[in-house]
Image 1 (cartoon, rainbow, N blue to C red):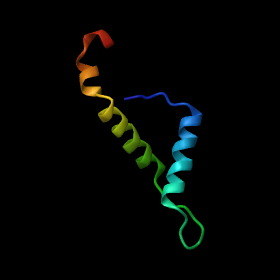
Image 2: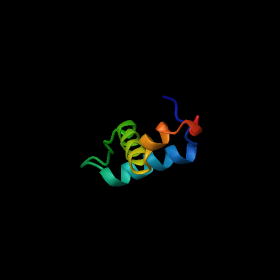
Image 3: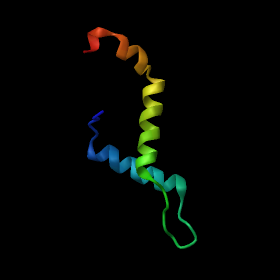
Image 4: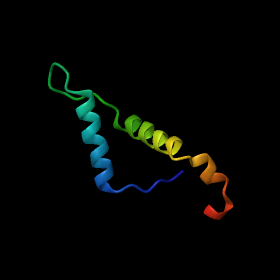
Length: 60
């Protein structure tokens, strides 16, 4: 599946993921932003009712 995202959205995911994770004792941020993005997209699709949207032929 291809999803088009703006650069601003990707920057927000990286920045907010780093804020949430916080730095380690060396000041490094250890967060997998790809996993964070996948979880965010999955949550959005689940909450916005993607299953119903996909079943509606008018959306194609």
